[in-house]
Image (cartoon, rainbow, N blue to C red; front, side, top):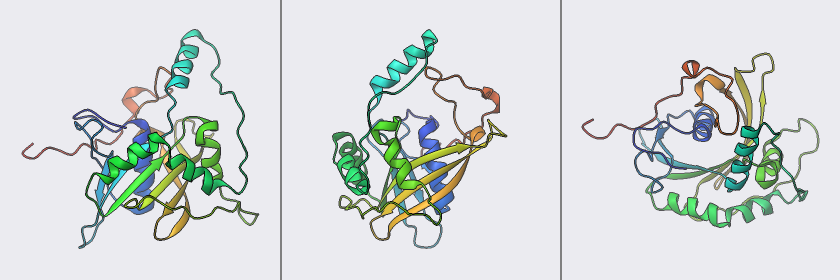
Length: 235
């Protein structure tokens, strides 16, 4: 994903940034403002004396065709839906992830990360479609309590990539429809394996939804997303 100079993060980027910040305790800056597709989306420096740097790219499997279809359905007052079947791939989630990371759209984003110097390079994946990753991301990140957990093998990440995040199921507090939502995450670290997290995302801290796809139930003046743009030198 990319941004013009002076822009705030997109909605999907902001969700990713807020989630990573809660897990890692860092402060993420928008890294690609004014750089088009040349730089990753976010960057941060870990607190402490070592000054370890990290960058992140937020992306998803392509879904442009469906987004156009949904925009047309909204304009015409028709329901929006997905169609098609989803292979179960039980106990094959690692293989699903490996196949996804080998696709052209993923490789392009991985190459973007590898082109920049950093101590850590993170790829944050979300899915706009249930059948094109969403179903599998839910299973990667869901917690089963004391029940049986689906087995997930370790991944072999491309050299130079330290972490891959998978955005899973979100559940909004029904008592506060415009309040916060619980978000589940799965994260694979090259040095530590799989981790799962639960974070909370405040709706008012996010940019508006895509109004071509859905109506925004939150008044624009109530939204207060952070300005993450890094000021240019001398600015």
